[in-house]
Length: 181
Image (cartoon, rainbow, N blue to C red; front, side):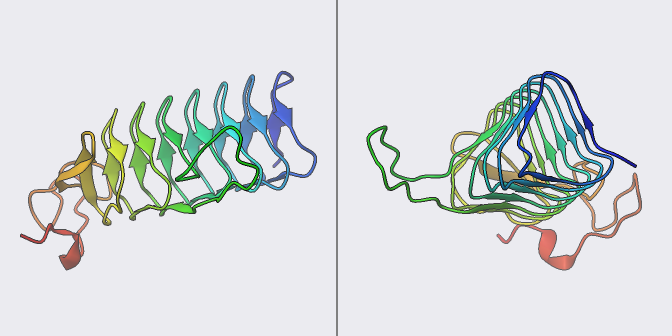
């Protein structure tokens, strides 16, 4: 298995890229970034220096993954979503303070969502399109809005969960997946 890099992509020789990964047109992958196996890096994606992506991550068009962001395995990043990495950004600051952000295994982030730095998005959580995430998202939570608020629970398969066992895929959600009232 090998890595495919489109001729128009700009990929640093200091980036670590796993087997089976495909990097498409106009993408930029910076030095010291890590991209796992069998990932798809779509058109016009920016992977910053020292960003970390796990295995089987699908990054849709126009996504920015900045330094300080760590993505788990099997994560979906929807078109034009973005991360931030500094709480106090100024063009004239020479001493950027990188604040880490984590996206755990299996999570999905919808199109045009913004993830403010310093949060963790839990396993198999789902962030609705256009949402602005300003605080941690629990595992299996469905969040939406600006700021994003929990509006439900999702199964591992991505469908909305109303029962402990998903009628679609038969996965049994963990007891702590349900919103505490």
